[in-house]
Amino acid sequence: MIPRSAGDDAVVVASVPARHVYVRHLAAPVETRVRRLPDPDPADPSRSTSGPWWPPVMLDPAWIEGADFDVFHLQFGFDAWSPEGLRTVVDALRRKGTPFVYTVHDLRNPHHEDRTLHDAQLDVLVPAADALITLTRGAAAEIHRRWGRTAHVVPHPHVVDLRTMQSVRDAPARRAPGPRIGLHVKSLRASMNPLILLSTLLAFVAATPGAVLQVNGHRDVLEPDGARYDEPLARQLRLAAARGLVDLRVHDFMSDDDLYAYLASLDVSVLPYRFGTHSGWLEACRDVGTTVVAPDCGYYADQGAVFGFHNEGLDADGSSLRDALEDAVAHPGWGAVTVEERRDQRADVADFHAELYTSLVRPGHTRPVTDVDDRLEATILDLLAQRAPTATICPSDAARAVGSSEDWRELMEPARQAAARLVDRGEVEITQGGRVVDLATAKGPIRIRLR
Image: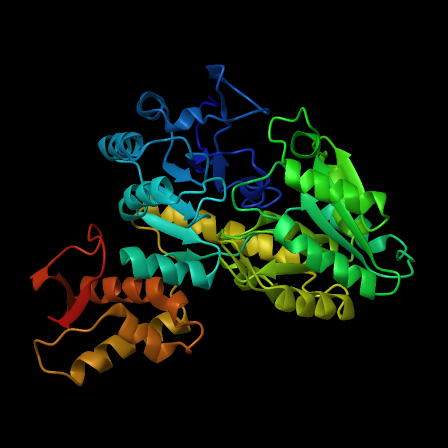
């Protein structure tokens, strides 16, 4: 573990994991405000690793108790942990007095056919977190609906490194007689079912002059001796390839550079998910300018501009997929983001995380009060003044009054903070179940009333 040095004011974060590309891009390229501990080596937790981090050592209560850090931030990697095991993690953090942040990437685990375990894991983690983050408004609304918690909505940062993004944009435009549509059959997650999409994709390509359907698949799925061999899928793909209907490419896992070059070579990438929440693949496509066709399950359409089709469970709608493909082919580069947009977004994301961590470990530190904060404070007081002296309101009442019908949920946490400032000034008090409570320790929905 890296020791703290004298005068080091950085907030030290135990991030599970630390080396994943998503987590790396939560920090500014040169970051001094936050220091994330390196992933411990699962084979020898006394040393760090730049290689495999799973199973995450940081989820061991003994590691938590012995390590020196300010904030614990869980992203993912707890798939194999029981709810009881996760409670021991939360209990260890409580004993240590360490703030716990949880980013809710998955409301439905893409690796699990049965959602029971993941739901039980979330029932431990979401209520216990001192702060919640998620990637889309839709996911935040589901979190509030299921647990009564407000999650900060912070967009997914870029996946492809900025230098590679720039190289892709500077490369000469690919010349082809028609669109190249990609369907990637990586080591099949439970959430993926590419076979039910195949007939529609083949028919669309056959009817579109110059179009090519390129299917890339891993050997473990498409070769008979593969650990996850899918015989029906492999048979259909090889038959289609033999008839010249599919450009089939079977290979091992791609390096990052090869993956990004592959995505950039496509005009359209089709996501074959039948359940899920968010997608890093979608973000990588946006980085390299590839149009995405995504299902209407989960919150993929909330992440960025995609063309959607109906695909949930075993029910795939060929007609909506065909319409989405037509739209995607007609709008090349739809949803693409520029290097400048991603650079600015990353700075915003890094600022948010640094401010959140600092506010959790240094209670005296708060972000600057904005005009919106002032409006929220005034709105809370105005709404209460219009009611009986003992009446109460929810933070959502103020958020709805200040925000629009589309963005008011993003004002839920600022509304709670506005209420906290009014409490500090002695103007209001916070209640739950009719009893006055401390907002700093209150979990779940709260009410506000005049003092």
